[in-house]
Image 1: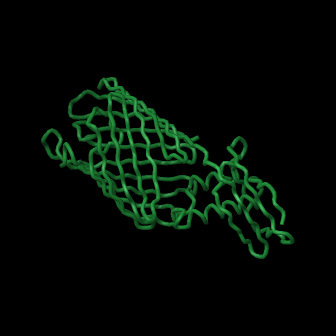
Image 2: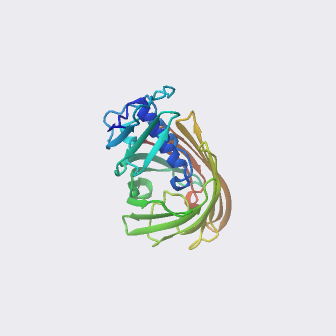
Length: 323
């Protein structure tokens, strides 16, 4: 047996590691779903590995066995030669290759989003808001820092938050925390179970300080969700968010469809129905959000009538990049 350092630019090593990671992801302990579209894009041969974060990975070639040549050529970015803390053997017919990856923390990835929000309607002056948000994702979950300003409304607020997901047997626990200038503190917790079919329930609470609510759902609320995930990363989910504190008649219902496009991209459709009282009058309005993700860039457009259960409507445009 010959043991050497894995070469992530080698077609054999790359293909085997991709299969290992995909098999681990498909296992119930790994979430029961295949590698994401983003991961598959990063494994594309056209993606250069230079400048990526690297970790040390070993490969063991079984003595006296010839490698099968039917493997597709592929270049694996070094950032995806991650230490998974596992030792596995991958048999490719008569020959065999075994890999052992040493423990290593996953690299931190970032996402920057800039948004322009336009308010209009009911005879009030048109107003615009600007939002900037930087999000970091790592083993700690997601942490973000943002700023929102709307001059016509005399609103300026620095915001920050954190969220993560923890697997506890067959249950996923998803907590979140938010803080903002002006003394705002809020948080939520949700539990979800199921892989192909899934259901979830949760609740959110705040200290009722002023907050630029860019989540656009009630913060002090009950949450109920359920849906279905296909093996090709399509999903359809229904989520109900109902105020449980100051305005218990107000409710948002989302029907969210996500689907891969051309293998590497993703389409997201979020159809919104909202009902409740606004200034003492009942409303029943419909909105729509459309998002499109490329591996590195993304864009979102949303129409949200009587946003946050106010008198005005909002048109939102957000663009961003991952790095």
